[in-house]
Image (cartoon, rainbow, N blue to C red; front, side, top):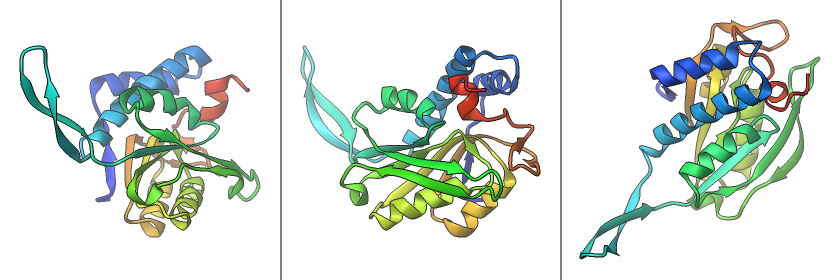
Length: 208
């Protein structure tokens, strides 16, 4: 699994426990999810390229840095929206697109209903935001859309991943790095991650 990067530290583990707890309220859930998203954003940024430029401090001129490439964030509606603010606080110049997918509960396959992205995907770093990598269907479909529309370097940021979803991504998009805070045991018969945290969208927005 060379394309898998696990973002693991004591604070992430603490917040993952809050996400897994069925008694966590939507507000507590959102706050923990946001903090983990910060950690993932920082880990992803370690591989960004920089350009130098001159900065003038109150005392003298010195070397400064800026990102070499435009960053584009693509949350998968609707759960992916919960990760956007954290990434934007770390990457305020990023542009934001959206992909709307919903899962057919019988076939477990994604059904698309919305797609809107900024221009310039080819020369940008595109980060797909989706809290759960379960069957991998939504991630694969999203990257199919993005590549079809000219996306260059793509990354996936998620909170919890299932081995089945990782395997499918490795098979269909082996060029894409997956950043995740945890790899769980397996999927159940309904396509939910075990032990998981339930439905990230429902728990974020309180739509039980």
